[in-house]
Image (cartoon, rainbow, N blue to C red; front, side, top):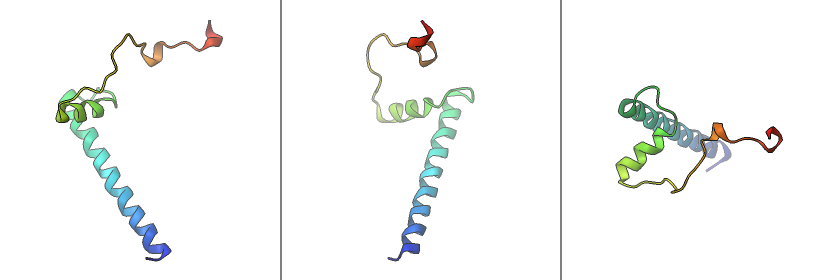
Length: 71
């Protein structure tokens, strides 16, 4: 396969991946509402697989973490 053939194959693979991602976001919006965040895509995968990927413990929300210079 030449350089152009490999590039075309990569573009097709990318397009397929983008379609899959778009489908997962649409599915998450249908299940959990349009206002749900991007992590609901992970929730779709967890629910379908019957697993929970969350790490136990007391975790701060990312928006609550303070930079050391802010203290």
